[in-house]
Image 1 (cartoon, rainbow, N blue to C red):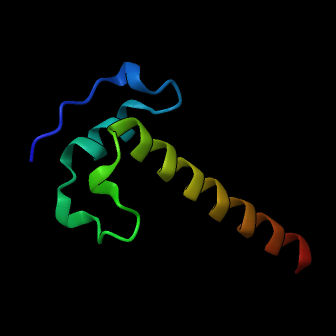
Image 2 (cartoon, rainbow, N blue to C red; image 1 turned 90 degrees about the vertical axis):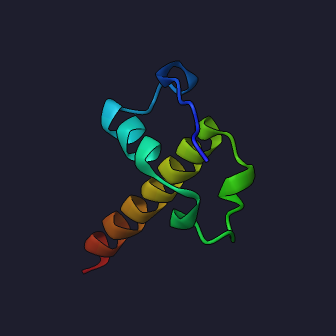
Length: 65
């Protein structure tokens, strides 16, 4: 499945983000996030939110140590 991506779909995504997404395949996603049903922009938003969550948890853990 080839997805045509347009960098205008998301203002927060870098060129590297788009390059990584373009190289992804359906097998890269296990289905629990239903990536196959998401638009490319929705996939990037989900990935961004996941990365922000991880960063916020790491930051809070550093403050407690």
